[in-house]
Image (cartoon, rainbow, N blue to C red; front, top):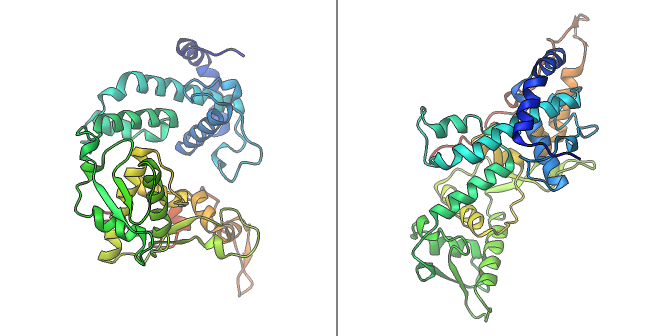
Length: 345
């Protein structure tokens, strides 16, 4: 199976552009939702086939059958059109990774900056390019003081106080910059235990603290967990809407520190948060599918109402609903499902 170079792909795009433009027009045009769906399918295919997403042979890019729930924008799209659009994203990401990323400042960008321009197109950046940028950022921002400067915390797993609470108290006066080590953010000593080495107690501490946090009332099981029937995604957690007290906000800050430390030291935490929550944390707009993953019955009910072609009113007249349109999260989400994200929260 041929693997095309960047030059080959550029030539292919130039020669096929008129033909594919006509196909796109016949299909209904290329929308931002279509592009996001292509990026998702491209990332998934690269992971499935064991390729870097920038260099995935597009002959391996296929459309999953019966995938209209996850990618409604691709419903009815010719696979040739999806592959053609994916070639644009591969060219863009190859240029971005090799040319522009070294000049991007990760600090909060100005509206006119290169960082802001790239950030405005983040939906078009492939997962492997994002991970490569994250690795560079972690390498350049780590604490260069050496292991001797690593904070040490002493914890007692036999005490009545949860490990998460103990850890939060030990780290509350430690500047976050002191925890920027890419192997271990801090050294852990368990009282009355003879743990061998440093890495084992550290990972055990993070895992135990994460399990404790899920019991603090900051997160709750999604509505799907209590719904009847054999639903998927019944084990996802969402943020509890009422968790807004000063104490809760302090705990959320600690959760953020824990996330940062775990990312740097490559420790997987048992936070099974719904994509709905992760998108909000990243400042992205959650999708209707994200809401479906946490409250399937609600989304299905709204969809059934919309799909009704007509209904009879109490006075016997027939009311025809407005023409169908693509649902947005604003249409489906009750107010204040997640507290507004501010500098404090």
